Length: 615
Ligand code: M6R
Image 1 (spheres, rainbow, N blue to C red):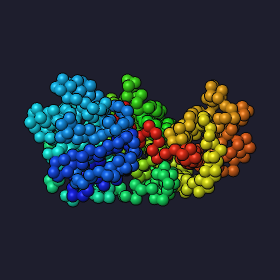
Image 2: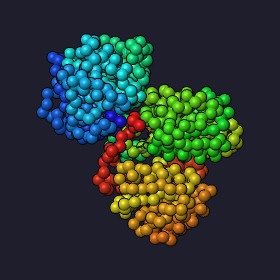
Image 3: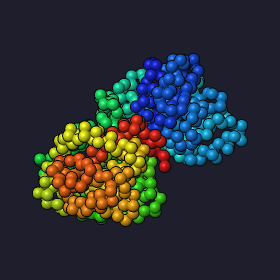
Image 4: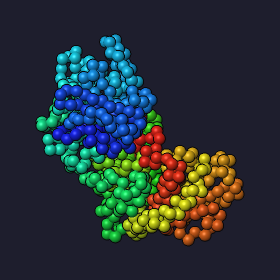
């Protein structure tokens, strides 16, 4: 939700800011803007509705010469996407400018008080309230910019990552965070600032992740100064980034989403690396082995997540219950946090989040910690809030995921949950060594099998997608392990093609959705071989009997469903617990090609943002 970039140094700030905004556009693309602070004390602010490319066009004939600047790409919360509501916002006297990611919950109270003091507002945003408050404090208390920001933030309730610049401080950016991410890149006589490290990875690998409640004075030629809101100096923890620039580019693919789908053989290999050893006989998840007693004695596992990560969580329930015989509850993080949850000290709460920054999931983590549970995080983004706030965890190691529709992160999450289940089963003795080795060996084959699925099915799915592009509704059905896959397939289609799609447990269909079935509504059935295969054959027949059009994902060599379905996509045979990773790949491709046929922007679908840091 909103991306922030900042730069201070000797280069042309505008170029760095624009490139950085493009990298952060996954966080929102309702409007974009920059504030450039020239050394002679002039602030130029340029902002427009729409994507960063609109901003570039708007700036083409503008004065862009400055070595300090802040920039923003917006996902609208307060006020519609418009030029006026776009960031940066500035104080009425034009002396200071701000960019902000987050929401200021008490902005109305603050605004009313400022209006009483004669302030006038131009936008509908909460952010303009903050910048006016900072300037009001700076003038009334005759204090420094740093101090004014600090005092203003003490009055704020809500979430924020901000960057502030002032006309009379062309060599300084003030930055602060509370619940929204912000990282400072340390270069050679230059500093970078961003919502994540991607905007500056080609300039420096050294960075400092700001912590909640911290405020930083970033001054060219001087060491960083970081304090809390009470002005107590903080320790500065410098991290070295592992990310490479090639991971952030499309590498010859037309879209990040397609690149990320095709990266899965490699990302799954990276995810498994070092975790499945002795040719599949032993599974090592450090977060589990470092907390053996916790996992050995856990009475219940509660998994919290949102969106695609919640679908991975549902698969986690099947995996953990099957392999470890521990009861598992799966909750939407947004519901969990307000449901007065009953959490016990011997519960393990697992929070899953690709970004590691989802506000609802982060809040669920805090609630679980307060209730005394052991909280374990599964995330992709190293150094993000959820890994930092949880007691132990596991990264999925799939590299930066830029496409807003999650693909490789989903399969990475499912893989980690599979390995975690095997590791806990090993620990609790709920599977024999032979059973573990049987699954472990197949896990090692998954990257090759996913590669085979991509090679054999990509062209076929591209052709087939033409048949399905103009359907207005889709039903996705699956049972057991294939039920969450159906939900995820339907979500992928909705997100990027804007076609209505429902995921359902196949047997539930007859309790209602069957009424929808006709020739106009395709049904996608996920039906690999497994213990409920015969049951799903009946469901396929039920759809066919109502004249439904069926696309089925089946195991190589399937003869039964192939006879009934209109189209089939065959995937390699795997133990049932490993089928979700294999069967979800053709569904990713199907939604991708349908969206392309419809001319949609698959990497930046309307109204969505990749990192949802607001409630
Ligand atoms: O970063 P997270 O995994 O916490 O994000 C959760 C959801 O916002 C996310 O999975 C969303 O549903 C994606 N757009 C799915 O493609």
